[in-house]
Amino acid sequence: MDQFTINLLFVGASFALYIGIAIWARAGSTSEFYAAGRGIHPVTNGMATAADWMSAASFISMAGLIAFTGYDNSSFLMGWTGGYVLLALLLAPYLRKFGKYTVSEFIGDRFYSQTARIVAVICLIVASVTYVIGQMTGVGVAFGRFLEVSNTSGLLIGAAVVFAYAVFGGMKGVTYTQVAQYCVLITAYTIPAIFISLQLTGTPVPALGLFGDTASGEPLLTKLDAIVTELGFNEYTAHHSNTLNMVLFTLSLMIGTAGLPHVIMRFFTVPKVADARWSAGWALVFIALLYLTAPAVGAMARLNISDMMWPNGGIEGGAVSVEQIDNDARYDWMATWQKTGLLDWEDKNGDGKIQYYNDKSESMQAQAEEKGWVGNELTKFNRDILVLANPEIANLPGWVIGLVAAGGLAAALSTAAGLLLAISSAVSHDLIKGAINPQISEKGELLSARIAMAVAIVVATYLGLNPPGFAAQTVALAFGLAAASIFPALMMGIFSTRINNTGAVAGMLAGLTVTLVYIFLHKGWLFIPGTNSFTDADPLLGPIKSTSFGAIGAMVNFGVAYVVAGMTKETPQEIKDLVESVRIPRGAGAAQDH
Image 1 (cartoon, rainbow, N blue to C red):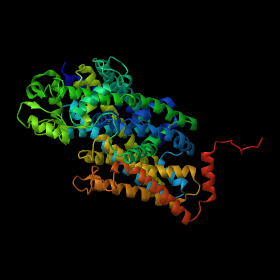
Image 2: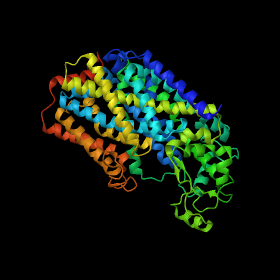
Image 3: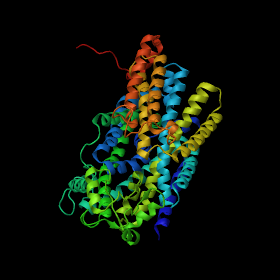
Image 4: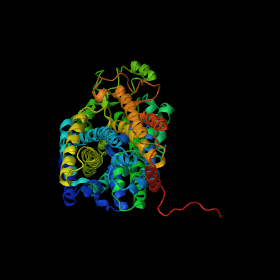
């Protein structure tokens, strides 16, 4: 059986499962559509949250970014997992206790203002649409490779599948679909990692294999450091980027995680307040299974790629020949990925070999000139393909490749569905019912939610054709927007009775605007290529990249909110009482002096 047929079988079976679950658990009421009837068990909800969270950025893109940068991109791991600790401790139980369906509804009621609710809807839509762009990028990469079609065709096919099960299933259908998707994606991620770890280190646990020894007795990371520095790249395990930017980036990811509406919505689906905290804890456990494996996947893949491009023992042994790439079955993966337009090479100096090295390194330029090289000949290696190509690079069995195909698509589609639910509920429940037409029927509200979801899919698909970066980089922008706009409003809404409606609105608008402008200056206005004034290689504010600016936007939000609140009317007493009742456990009395 050929690889294409195997891929179709795995992907087809997984899709049949997802769509079958969506039909079985189809939402019949607004309560089921928005919050799954508030009847989801914490463990089930934790698993669904993990699938909702571990998007194309986590499954497809993150290990690729770590593989080609090393230690400096470990901030993705620290920021995204750290954010769940904040979410579990500071937000989830209190928001569940408030008892609303959506983040915007909480903000509107807490700040006693329709304006605050509408501004929250705007912030939510901007962050969520940016996030969906990253998912659609991943969908295009995965479908393009495993259905052997163009990246564009893959993206359009994926959009149709998301529409099918997200629009009809609602939160109830999506929850149970995401449980199935978690099982698929974690199996698909760990099995190849175990195989590759055994190949390279003899250790079946990838996280331990990362710090283990290779067959030659040399530590894996020491060997990798030696290879990449020989090729002119930065040492893999050392810190090379700006520390301030790295700290801001990690902080932006952390508070962005705690402010993402599609993740927070999951905590509205459990029966009790305690269950919301347990859900966050279980989600962290399920997420850790992948996040502890990702650094090993990145390092081992980088080692395998370097060995394949220099199969004769490094630079002195000579690079891989064009003839070997064309005729050796171990290199078939390169021809397959070349068809997608995400991988390419060129024999620039006509010597019949493909030299892969850092042609921007001064030391390598001198060596290249001496050897007659005229530049790096592995001209394109999209970071988003690494995890999907990993089983082929390691020459694993065809069924493992098919399983990874299904896992990659599960990761991208599960998060896309959660984000589209967040967008649709914001438009139908918060904007249409909450502000425009409070008398709308339940049937009309469900219809408007599904129409909003369809429109969001069309917009995200269009923008996904020309994304502002790799999947994880695009998602990082969305985290920055959530960090700058939604997270401060939630924190101040729960823990400060001083912040009034005017302060909250001013803070959200200030945080969102300053962050959005900074991102557009670096990534192009409305993400249109060629309209940017700066790049992340040469940022506007010293070392601070657009992906790190969310933390500064959050500071702006907090500062503006407190200043404006201090200059305007005090929060009404009934709202202060509401905040106290949400934050303090029922039955808690005053402290006693014994």
